[in-house]
Structure formats: structure tokens, C-alpha cells
Image (cartoon, rainbow, N blue to C red; front, side, top):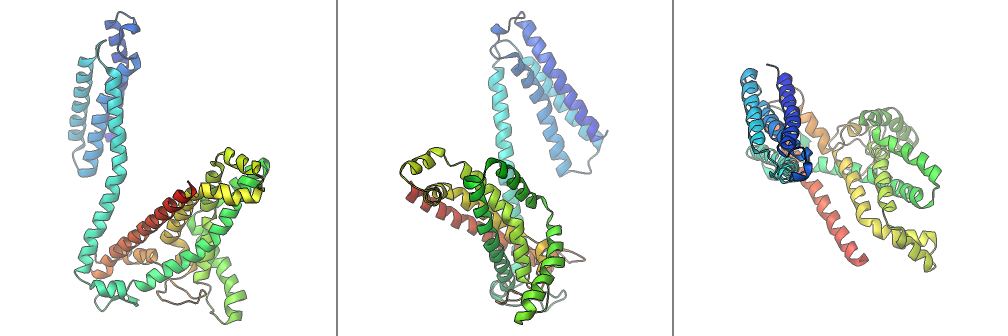
Amino acid sequence: MPVSWTLLIVLAMAAAGFVIGRSRVLAAAGGDSRKLHSRTSYYGWNIALFTAVPALFLIAIWLFAQPGVDRWVLAAVSLALAVAGLGLSLSRTAPDFRARNAVETFVRGLLILCSSIAILTTAGIVLSMLFETGNFFSQYPWQDFFFGTTWSPRFGGGSELGILPLVWGTLYISVIALAVSIPIGLFAAIYMSEYASHRLRSIAKPLIEILAGIPTIVYGLFALITVGPLLRDYFAQPLGLGSSGSSVMTAGLVMGIMLIPFVSSLSDDIINAVPQSLRDGAYGLGSTRSETVRKVVLPAALPGIVGAILLAASRAIGETMIVVMGAGAAARMGLNPFEAMTTITVKIVSQLTGDTDFAAPETLVAFALGLTLFVVTLGLNIVALYVVRKYREQYE
């Protein structure tokens, strides 16, 4: 039996249980709903939830753990569980049954389960990376990985897998991107929230947010075709700094443009959330609009603004396509912003694509790179949290 049929049958049983439960409890109360402990809809939902949710949960777990199982066996077990839930919930349906308490407890359990999925998923990702990273370090010295300055993977032996050139390229490109996006995005947010008219704001904000909906491959093409040649012809070559359109500056500028709506839109919402009473108090004390923005609004909105900047930084560190098409794939360390460099994410993709031996250190190194990226992002979160808490104490 197809799984879709099983799902439809389970949902139909739940719907029928909802109707039967309401009718049955009303009949038991003589048609007077005032004699019931809970509203009639709670009795119906109690039956529907106990009929559908366990069966649907079983189907999801079974398909995930045993995707090749006989579908007739899965259908039989699921329908049997649904029938059992329907019968049990119907047997408890009576005017004095605390249906509302049962439904709310059931729903609270579902909410806890959904909340746990994100935590368990994060734990699973970290544990999988730790396990594979351990396999990598059992084949390659950790000193050479963390302190090596050469990245030269060669399948078959003789690889040099130093991460420092990749870390340098990641940070260099991210710093340029943030140097572009943070001032522009923050100033745009301040203008739209504190100075712009309602009509201008209603037009400007959606136009800025369009940037967030553009696929990164389009930004990559923009970097490759337009920005790269422009920087090469008008800056790099005249200054004698390079002759390639793929460079750190190309990727950083385009990535900064991509990040503007993340900083601008989030900061705008956060600044608008500052209570108007704070502004009115500042105006009443004789502050100008600019003084109110600098000394009252921005300090009050700082925790949220730091969060917006942190989101932009995480996007910059994890971006891949713009780096591939704008900065190239050369793993090197240098200060020239018009040279081609690469990032950790690009090398993770390159090491895991194509015909690869997943037992070789040249492939397992991708998991070590991913774990390093995770630690760097976690460090950014910790630093931002410390800054926000310290400033909030001073402000309060």
C-alpha cells in the first residue's frame, strides 16, 4: 500500500474521531454542554490527536530508519496504532473527562518535541563532525593542520593540508564584506526609521530587501563579469597590484552588497522597536534629533543591532558561490586585496565533490575544516554576547 494512502486513511480516521467524539459526549450530557468539564471541541481534538499523531510519528520514524521496509507491513502497523488510539480515546470520552487538560498536555509535549529537534540536530551535526575529524587526525598530524601555511592536497600521498591560508582568506574577505555592509546598512536603517517619511520608507525598504532574495549565483556572476574586470582595469593594473579579475576585493565588495539588507532590515526593525517615550524624553530635555539617535536610540537598540551584524558575519563566513566566482580558488596568504584567494567553505566543497575516497585524509579534512568553521562561528557568538551584556549593564 502506498504511504500516501496510509496517511489519508489515518487522517480520515482522526477526522471521523473528532466528529464522533463531539457527538458522543454531547449525547452523554443530554445535549447540555454546561454539564461537560471542557468545551465540546476539546473532546473531539483529544480523539483526533491520539488517533493521528502516534501513527504519523511511527510512519516518519519507520521511513527514516528503515526506508526499504515492506509498505504493507508499515501500513498495517500504523493503522493498528491509529485504531488503538481511536478506541482508547473514545473509551475515555465522558462528560467528566478532563479533555482540555489532556489536549493541552498533548500539545505541550508536541511543542517540546519540536523544540528538541533543533537541539538534537545540532548535537548530531557536531558529533558527526567530531567523529570524522578524529579519523582525520588519526591519519594527519594536527600540528601540521592548524599551523601549516601550505594548502596542497594530493590524493595518493604527499599532501600538505595547512589551514592557515584558508582561515586568512575567509577572514580577509569577510572583513571587507562587513566593512561595506555594516556602515551602509546601519546608516540606511537609521535614515529609514528616524528621518524618512512614511511614503519613502514604504518604497525604499522593500527595494533594499529585494537584494536578500537574489540568488548568490547571480551575485557570483555579477562579481565575475562586472565587478572583477572593473577593479582590474581601473585599480589593480594601474596601481601595479595585479592583473586578475578574481580577487579578495571583488568577492568582498559583492558579498558586502549582498549583506546590506540583512543589516539594514533587521536594524530598522530593531530601532523602530525602541519605545517612543525614550525619544520624547530626550526631546523634552532639549536634545536634537541626531543627539537623540546617537545617545538614546542606538544604545537602546544595540543588542539587536549586534545580533544583525552577527548574522551578517555568519553569512559572510559561510558564503561559497561568490567566493568561487569572485575570489578564485588559490590558497595563499597575503595583504594585497587584488590577489586571488579562497575560503574554508570553498575547499570543503572541492574536497567532497567528484570521485573521492572517503577514507583518505584529503577527503576527511573537509570535516576538520567544517568543525573549525563551527568553532569560529561559535566564538563570534560568545564575543557578541559578552559585548551586548556589558553594554546593557552600562546602559541600564
